[in-house]
Every structure is written in structure tokens, then in C-alpha cells.
Length: 121
Image (cartoon, rainbow, N blue to C red):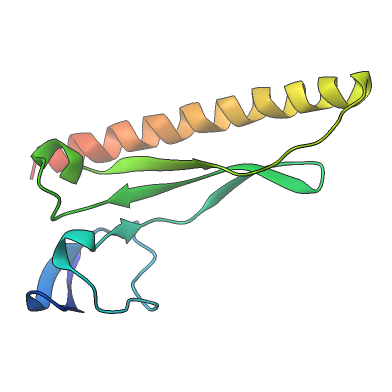
């Protein structure tokens, strides 16, 4: 469920906008430009061994220029993970990537459902 939130910006003053129910909030918001306002969901970390390979989270940029880019998307970031692996570790990495791919597919289905709801608004 969406509710409204008001955030200060340097170029438009206080801006009131709907906040999606999946957004984790804006407690760390510092005033910037309105176009840079972003809603972010909980971070999903995709780990291997002692490192993180990817992070992914729902994201929405309600004031970007391109209307299609305003829709909810999945922000995915690759980390700088690197390691020299032996054959066993390579197989372990491959297994972890297979599990992570399944998780990404689940996130894609959740995103599809959210975007369908957005289309009905």
C-alpha cells in the first residue's frame, strides 16, 4: 500500500510523492535534485564464500525524464568479488550462481506483479 511522503529538494523545495509499500524509507535522505529522488526496497545480497557477488533491490525513480524508466525496476549491482579458485571451489561457485539465478527469477516474478499493479493505477 502506498502512502505519501514529503522530501526536501534543492531545486523544487518540499516534494510530496507516493511511497510504495515495498520502499524501505528515506531516513538517510539528504536534499538533492528532484530528478534524483529514488525509492529503494530491501537489499538482496547474493553471496559466495566470504564475499558478495551481486546485490539487488527494487527501485523506482519517479521523476526521471523517460516515463518507462519511472516504473519499478530491479536494481542489480555486481560487486568487485574476485578470487583464484581450485576445481572444487569453481563447482561451488557454479552451484551458488545456479541458486542465485533462481532467486533472481523469483525477484523478476515479484517485479512483474508489482508492475502489473502499477499499470492498474
